[in-house]
Length: 111
Length: 112
Image (cartoon, rainbow over all chains, first blue to last red):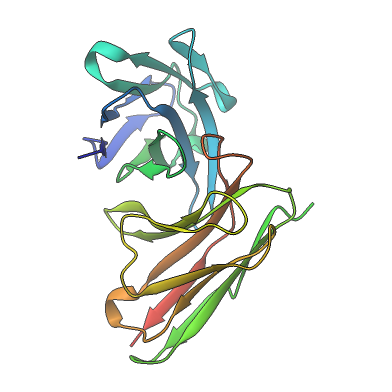
């Protein structure tokens, strides 16, 4: 069955520290991959996407993600976290028309 | 530039009542979606419409119906609301099925 897994429900990092949020997928073929961010009470905003080509993709707000086909992973990273990055982050995948989301990782940033 | 507009923002229903959630987009997108968001479960796809005139079931379609009224509008109907349908509902649209989604601000529905 197709699935998207975000193993970490909640992560706490100190401001200025680096961040990595994990995402694994299980699909019959390599899907199109996305990361979205949701601030409290808001809809979701696209951070970045991977369709093909270079496996390291850059997004908005200083985020990047690396696609690793051998590990079926698409992990999100940021070198230095800011307090304003506190939010919930969702990995999403699609093969064609039906985008599916992981359960999300809530990020808390300590001063 | 409104993007994706959902109405209402909040709704309280009693068990067994019906209601329709409205969604409209002004970006000339072909694909539209309805998701529900519950704590710890992320967003789950209820129904989607890849193009005007077509609709398909997603992961959790039971208890819901949809109508793609035209290219702009995609409504979600609860015929007989149940407490298990208490959730935040998001409508989204995209240019095509594999393109990034643009989300509305959500409808918070409580069924008592």
